[in-house]
Image (tube, rainbow, N blue to C red):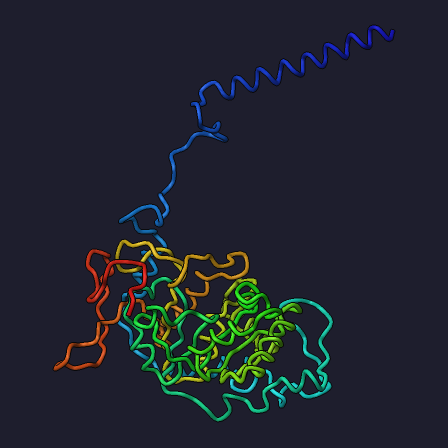
Length: 390
């Protein structure tokens, strides 16, 4: 009986091995040397991605450009209505930043990005909050909100950006080393993502002077830190504040209010936006709509193809590092901003700015007309995605 069982087991093993060998050779019979076997049915390849196809235009990009191409005109009534709705829901003028008035001693701060035990406001923590609201009884006529999109490279928009009364920038972007011509250098408010402090400056646990020196180009601007979005943001944000104080830097660090961020997230969700977290760009653009009578957005273009000519773009004007697509929904956010542009609530600038006129001519900047067809270059274009030294 035992011998029969061993014989049957041997036959079963040999049959299994033979079946595997037949399957292997039948699936690799037509595979060319050096190429992996094709998985799944053989089909014609889809459209070549725009980043690898010169002259090709993505259908989505075409539709976006078509929507943008209509002439723009400010609509005061629509701006007033949208600002009223935004202000009533979010109260950015009084609640965007943590202050000693809106977050008193002994209160608790609830993190907006994760569920964890609220943070008790101790005397030490309370002392780090700004005493006065930086936006109380203050509004501006014109504001430039500068994203970091690759579309700004070779845009010659620096002077136009700096002409605004209030300039907002995102995530400590580089302004020197030839970037001034395209992005300007005036800064009234700049955000600082703690991840940048961790990656570039070791979380400020070692040498801190390089961080302080990097802030010189932003002058005495407000430096906005999301200290209470996640628990790990709090220590590094506090170290940034202490470093600025210890080195007598003119920068003015303030903390984003998690209550404001939660209200803002609910507001945009009510507008139909679906995303895990709002991007820094949408947050500061929303704040600008409460602060400014005329909001101009630069560097807001989430696609890797230039809107007016067949040219691939880097993700940022200074590098090609990709955003966290699982966290932020950049194209969806841009769609909502484009709707506001079409309604005359704010203005998105995708054109290149005309170069400053030569002596003897008017020095006032004008906007160069963009070609929707992608067949002609705007005035002053160098046809390159890389920045040109100023």
